[in-house]
Length: 111
Image (cartoon, rainbow, N blue to C red; front, side, top):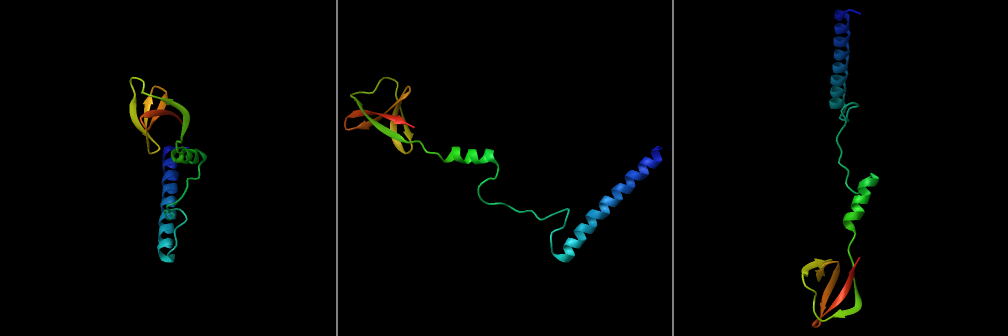
C-alpha cells in the first residue's frame, strides 16, 4: 500500500470519528439527554465498592479498647511517656500500659 493511500485512509477515519462525536454532542443538546459517547458525570456518595477500599474503611473505623487488669504498681518504671488511647490518658512504658488509679497505677491491656 502506498503512503498516499495510507494517509488518505487515516484522514477518512479521523473525519468519521469527528463527525460521530459532533453528531452525538449535537443530538444530546437537542434532546436534553446525555450523549452516547460523552455521558454525564455522576458522583457516587456512600461506601466504596471495591473490596480493598472496604478493608480501608474497616481499618479506619475500628477503635482500640482498654481493659484494666487486677495488677497494680506503686510507681511507674523509668522512661514512661504519657499518651492517650481511645480518649483515656495512659502511661506507655515500653510495651506495657498503665493508668492512674488513686495514687497507684493499674496495668491495662490495649486491644
